[in-house]
Length: 93
Image (tube, rainbow, N blue to C red; front, side):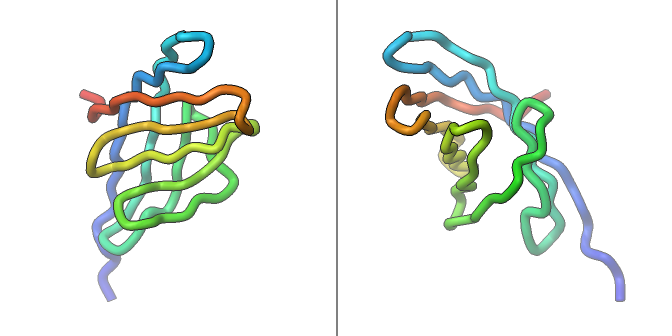
């Protein structure tokens, strides 16, 4: 059988972290085939695990719980309630 076409989507997200009001640029790479997401990397670091809920990728990295909505192109995250971030994403050129 033929393998489904594989691809990669790269998003650049500008996340504003509260309460510090600092902006971090986060790079998200999503490897996929025609059927499913196969791997997710954030700032070049592969995430250990992830879940898909519709168009949202749910994952975590270094105590930061992260939600990336690939349809709305938004980043939402929190560090165990100590800090939160929200931002917009766009496809990398």
